[in-house]
Amino acid sequence: MKYTNLHNLPEPLVNAIAGEKKFEKNRYSVTDLLKSPQELQLLRRHNDEITIDVSDGLWAVLGSSVHYILQKHSKTGLAEQYLTTDFEGCKIVGVADLYDEGLVTDWKVTSVYSFLLSDKDNWAKQLNIYAWLYKRSGMGVKDLRIYAILRDWQLSKTFADKDYPRIPFIEKKIDLMPMDFMESYIRERIRLHLEAEKVTDEQLPECTPEEKWARETTWAIMKKGAKKAVRVFEKEEYAKRVMESLDEKHYIEKRAGKNVKCTSYCNAKLKCFQYAKEIYK
Ligand code: SF4
Image (cartoon, rainbow, N blue to C red; front, side, top):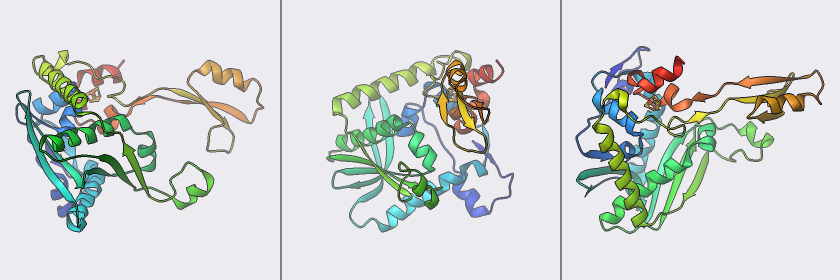
């Protein structure tokens, strides 16, 4: 991966962000396993050709700083423990944020919106793979939790929205999966990644809507002067039908769907045939 510094960010930030990611054959980190086979293959094959700007990694630095604080201030737990195991001819590695008497926690710094709408299923799998790694190294796991620090939390929103988090922190309990279930899941992930190694970039299995974090196009009924939609529909015809009973202060706003991962979070996108095909269709 090559880095540019288009916005002249200060050197300590650049050094913190522009780390080298090395890929090794048959070695998978927990996050590698969870990536789609297409994304992981493209990143592995084109690692030396992909260029990103350090400004894209600014939020990740905040996440890393929390890990640093955990290492410094956790009095009883084991922070940032490197875990590894051999499985199905591959090496699986991971660094869990914190282990404390059977409780495994993953710490995230994220926006309120991302937390509320994020794919919790992927977070659950990530934590359960850590639990599987701990158990394989002989350490018991009783409980899994996500601790999220909400970087854009606003006090004013707590008064208007009863579902809005009360403080800039959320704790979420994650169900612990049985060991044999996780073993089958990880075996299947490895199989998919090894299969993807055998084909060309153009033949890679396409990412699913879930893997692309696809958001469908919706139609919102808006009232002039208001920021929040009165109602949001998945079909235009439903919105039109409801509009028939409303006055001229209301109008329909089309909210175009998009693949959030592809457009904003996938470093492989410029090498991806599926992405090129979908944006030019
Ligand atoms: S750009 Fe989208 S479709 Fe292509 S690898 Fe990334 S997530 Fe998948």
